[in-house]
Image 1 (cartoon, rainbow, N blue to C red):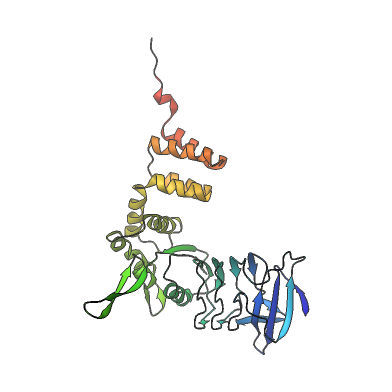
Image 2: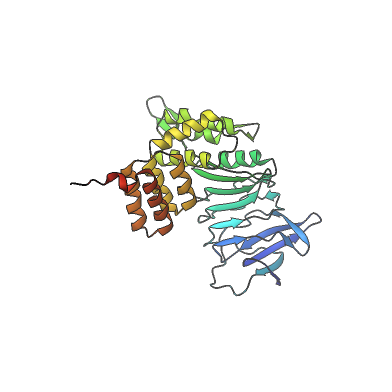
Amino acid sequence: MERVSGVNNWKLVIRREAAGVVILWAATCDAQAALPDNLFGLPVTALGHHALTPGRPMPEGEEVLVTCGPAGGDDWDNSALTDLTLPDSLERVGDYGFFNCRTLKTLRLRDTVRYWGGGALMNCRTLDTFHIACTGAEGELLAYLAEELPRELDVTLYRTDGQTARLIFPEYVEVYEENCPAHHFDYNIYGAGYGYHHCFYRKQFSFKTYDDLWRPMLGMEYDKDCALRLAWWRLRYPVELADQAEAAYLGYLRQRPLAAGRWLLERRDTEGLQFLLRTLDWSRDDLAALCGEAREKDSPEALALLLEEQHRRFPTGLDKSFDL
C-alpha cells in the first residue's frame, strides 16, 4: 500500500486514467474529512460505484493510504463521517456512491460535479446541509439535490461574484394512500416544501421564483421554525432580493423577534444577533428575556450586545423618579 500525506486519514483503492484518478473505494476513521484533490500528480475526477458505502469490502485495485499523522481507532468504515469535502476537480459520482452513509450530514463540493449515478444519495438519512462553490452552473446541481432529497435542506452558495447566498428548502412528503372503496391509490403531498424543491426552469435556479413562494407557503400548513430560518437567511444574505420580498420577510420576523433571538442565542451567532438587533424593533420585555437567557447560556458576548441595545433603547435614567 502506497502512503501519501494529506489533510485527513483515508484508505483508498484507486484507478489511474488518462484524464485523472477514479476513487473506487474510500474509508476514513475521521468525523470531518476531505478527499484529496490530487493523487500522484493527477486530479481526482470520479468516485466509483459504492465508493463510500460503509462496510463494503475493499475491491481490487491500487491501494493508497492518505494520512496526516497517527490515526486513532480501527473503525475505517465511514461510520463516524458527518462532514465530507469533495475534490474541486470531481466531475462524476457513480451509482450508490454514498449509499448507506447514514451519519453524513454536511457535503461540501463544487457545482462542477455534473453526473450523479442512480441512488448516489440513497439512505443518506441525515444529509441536509450543502456548501457549494459556484462556477455559474449551480442551478443544475441544486435541481438534482432538491429533487433527490425532499427533506428540509440548508444550502449555502459561494458565488463567483464574491456574494454568499443561503437558502432553506422546506420539507415535503409524497404519500400514496390506499383508497379501498375505489380500489386505487391516492397520491398526496404533505408539507409546504414541494414548490421550493421544484422552483427550477430547465434546471436553473431563480431567486425571484424562490421568493415568490413565500406568501403561498404562509397560506398553508407550514413549519414556523423552518419559515423563520428561511426568512432570516434571505435577509442576512440578500442576494438578488427584491424590495417587496425583503418587506415580506421582515414582516414575518417582526412578529417573532423573541423566537429569532432565542434561535441565534442557541447558535451562539453574535454577529447575526447584532444584525437582528439593529434590524427589528424590540420591546423592553423581549430584550430583558433575551438577557436572562444569555446569562443562563453563559454567553458574555451576546449578553454585552443585548445590554447595550437595552440601554440604547430604554435608558435607565428615564425610569427614575424622585420624591421631594
